[in-house]
Length: 415
Ligand code: PLP
Image (tube, rainbow, N blue to C red; front, side, top):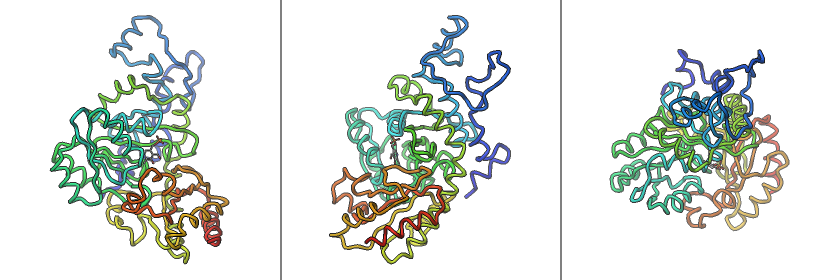
């Protein structure tokens, strides 16, 4: 596959866009007679925007002229962040980014933009983030949408279900939680498009640094920007990136439903985005090192990480990702009956890694998926998905890897 970060020589490279894109053009064109321009788009803490005359306001509200009118519609700080995300996910300018107050609000909007009305069917990956699956079943379900699930790593099964159900949309994740399976996005896009289904990819775990799903055939990309895009564990945010025809639906949907991102959160997310390449590169390196060391540890039964030789999607990962990601999960080598107790003992013994249910932060975070991200599932469904009681998930941060490994090793010694 081509390297999407290097194929942009005629344009600016990824790292440069991460730093510069979006700045200085949204609302900061005027120096307001001060003689200086802010180099970082300010936080526009303004609910509404006034114009020199009411005719201008009229044109802006009527959509005949670009401009800001009301913060639920858009805001210069939010637009600056959106432009930066769009430059990273869609450097050819074919798609626009829309920022939301959370990853869930972004996914809700993405589903709406795929015109999922009464009678429509959605085919969703069995391995989806639990709240996305529940959103589909409960919220889309209330609107008459039926959701069916499929193992999206079994392409024959995907093909069969698509032919049988003729879904309006297929929802998958670039990299799954917590076993870090890697979806074959180009093949799945091809299968979906053959039957006229839109492909929605939640690319939260991959980030545009490792994959641009739109280039691989996806129609709509969703991120929980709470995670890697902002990267510091200090905001909740989401983004949808899509081109025609989906982008046209996203703007009015957001205006009406009102899940618009706040200016302060947009500013922090935009600031975080500038270091995305540095952070993710380091997180990938650290995760590779940590997974290799865990794989050799006598108290660890199994390690899941796309760079490891025994990972089921290692070859797919090499084709669709430019790196193996910053997440690692592993099973403690303990009896099943003792597994939960051992997992809790391990987590309580950690001194540096933070016990907290999120990911993509500069800190290394550790969770017990069976009692956190997959808590709502029945034990049988957890077993089917391979989420064992002895499984621990790490979202590797940017600390020195030896300090993280040292912390994990001392916690393993308590078992
Ligand atoms: N998608 C994935 C893959 C997630 O892991 C999460 C949250 O953990 C979400 C979406 C939802 O994001 P948020 O918590 O920002 O609403």
